[in-house]
Amino acid sequence: MEKVSEKTGGSQTIRIPGDIPAPSGGKFRQWVRENLLLVLTVLGVFSGSAIGLLARQTEYSDEVVLLVGFPGELLLRSLKMLILPLIISSLVSGLACLDAGASGKMGSRALLYYFSTTIMAAILGITVVVVIHPGDPSSSGSQQEQNASGDSGDGDNTVMDALLDIIRNMFPDNLITACFQSVKTEAKLVNKTIGEGADQRQVTKVQRDLVVSEGTNVMGLIIFCVGFGLIAGQMGPQGKLMVDFFLILNEITMKMVCIIMWYSPFGICCLVAGNLMAIDNLADTARSLGMYMATVVTGLLIHATVSLPMVYFCVTRKNPFKFCKGIVQAWALALGTASSSAALPITFQCLEVNNGLDKRVTRFVLPVGATVNMDGTALYEAVASIFIAQKNNMNLSIGGLITVSLTATLASIGAASIPSAALVTMLLILQALGLPTHDVALIFTVDWLLDRMRTSINVLGDAYGAGIVQHLCRDELARMDAEAERRDREMAEMLRSGSVALSGGGRGSLLPRGSICPSVAPSGAMLPLRPTGALSPAEDRPPPSAPAAAAARNSWFEKRIPNSETQI
Image 1: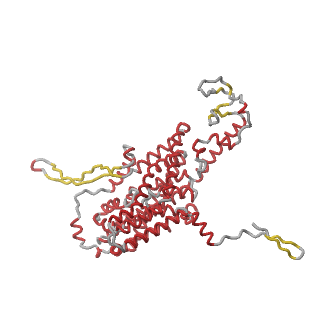
Image 2: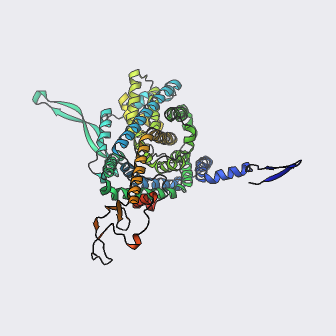
Image 3: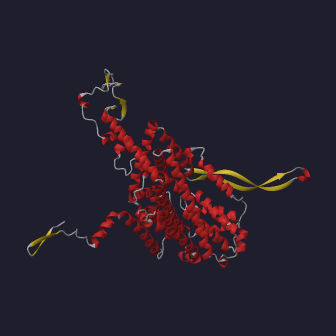
């Protein structure tokens, strides 16, 4: 700041101007440097779209498409590699640092938010598709021929089967196999002979078998990690070593995520370009399903810009768009990868660093939300099922629409957080409504694009949920922080008054002053015992201050990682 002297008549005035504002170009460059990763990610999305559209003007082979999309495949595989250690370490370490009351309230509030917004999304999807009415029966071809060609040799999985599969997968019989597979009910029609003699007849029955499905049983791992973390936190000093292990594992995993984040812009560019190049006829696809795509996108935009911000503002009374600005990086990654699990590591980073959320909240809410909270998927499935009914000239009653909303909510919860998982759960809704399941192939041609959009809405809903849960649990978190601060002050007072002494080289073992503690020689031989009240010359120093007492009490993890945003 520069002082400028001015003389007016016989007096002297000293004017101290404010800081000279930086030119607009300098501010923009500074903003780009501070948000370089975000800028590169957004550029990757647009660059991939441009490259894919330009490449379609030329002739290329399937091998070229494979090579273009290969770097994107490496990005997906790298992120999926970290999903399992990230979910386990974040849940265990986060819940171990919460008491049972705080974790119970946090979990109930998170689940209430998830179910509420998912039902809102399903109802919004039904409203949008009924108003716009994108299904045109005249463009569905020979409907009778399609229905005649549909193979109904398999039994239909009911809503009850899907619900039982969700509950069954919550309690896996083998944790190792749960890391890479789950179970599901498979129904098939079998012919059985009943009766004897003249009363003998053939009947067709539905036989249900449990079959193995490839993919991580995330729900089962979450249930186990929740119980493991809560019990480890209640064990106190006995479980401290295990809690420290998962805390360090979480930090290591997040550092690996930071490395992958700088590769993500290039990987997303290749993913988008490869998907565009793989479409056989882009113009015909856009023409035949244009209204359907417009309906889904309209519903997703309303949910992302109106419904979720409105819920966040009504609960927290804070600016939702300022909160959303901090998670653009996670939203862009979800848009490029079409996997909420793959975007989970980046979502952690955005919420904790950009938006300053408490790690005790994000480590519990986000892994659960990546599995349970599927707003975009519920909206998409509601629109797609009613669109197929409209294409087949079938009018759904009020009861049918209610069935769509409830079934879409349950199906979205059971959907895996992987690309195009909603197409699998879509069959459940179609069967519940009695609609032809072969029409799923009709919407598969554009699912690659809509999948990315609905996944980005899922991630957005998870982030808003973490912010809402932290606001609702702020009293419990403040009480826990005050309790920890009170213990630090009490320990500092005890050390200052001389009522306790640190033993074991100041590693935190407390003994009453005046008691007898053994001293161990370097060779391991026991030295003569001495009262802990008799200080050696090296120990004859003033009592430690409160920060020193707190440092003596802190764990090895807190000493080794002092730059954590929230010390838990």
